[in-house]
Image 1 (cartoon, rainbow, N blue to C red):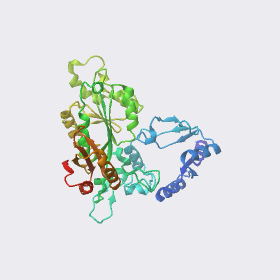
Image 2 (image 1 turned 90 degrees about the vertical axis):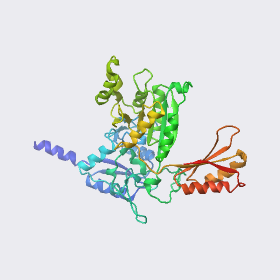
Image 3 (image 1 turned 180 degrees about the vertical axis):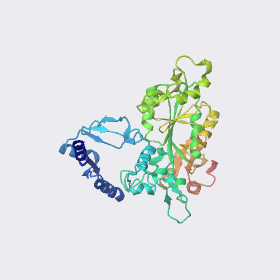
Length: 446
């Protein structure tokens, strides 16, 4: 026994080699925490001040390494295609990526940290939920504590975020220049309550050969766009794909790390063409497995009509599926990571499922400041108005300004969309003042 204890002591005293990429854009708190942790756990810290790829190449050339443990999780942007053991990508120095917490959720991570009393960076107590550089990271607006005007905003700690899928909501999109932001839809909110001004993005994917053949007209996507805009969500992409597993998987691959939520319509059921779940499984690189809980809901619906193995309708993507229950729904909705599958085939069914989604206590739909729009119409030609509208877009980067015609001979519609009504009114007035009185008429606003 004494010999065994001696060997264990020598193992525990052996420092763990750890790589830290130190940059000038790192939060001081992150640097301090890293060095304190290295001392606490006796880590052999390899400090690299180069970019990730060049730094690894230099380090592994000097100190050959077969495997590196990473903290990658399935929802991370760089997690696409990775498994627990994944060789490094083509063009990178060769090593085995070991991902021990790949299947952990945001909640799993915090449950472990709190239960085991693991020290963590103080920024997480200040509302930060996903920390990058000082140029693209801010406290998560969803943790903002309501405050009186003039007071400094206060935030709840990161472990109180109810929906872990939104951990990256505090990441701002930046241009290559660290001082210049992309003019996305910040929407000119002057009140600066973060929860009001923030915007989430979503995609809508409809699966249906019948739409592509022109047999039916897809209306659910347009209806869902309006509903998302009404709760402050921006729709960044809408697509129709055929009933093909590869088509579905490829579309999801392009969107799953780009948008906060993806809504997937169609191809759910017992028919040979109902392949949406298989497409989701392929996109996330998991298998379809029987779900007993889901089958309990399906069995009464199938009754005596079920033939063969009934489990076939209850095959769900393994390890990434969450069932969303509501008393108004016969069968719970299916959520796979940030993909929500809707079985609605018409607008009335969509209305019901949408209302249920909003009412869920753990709803993935966070309601923020709604988008407001105003439309002006004019018989001016595109050439007459083009230069003025282009200048207007530069002067109002917080407002989306689009132009379209409903018919070739019809009026030109100028559409203003944002979250601040005063800014929209100001932008529309700026446009009308550039032309003669009566050149524009208000089409609608909401």
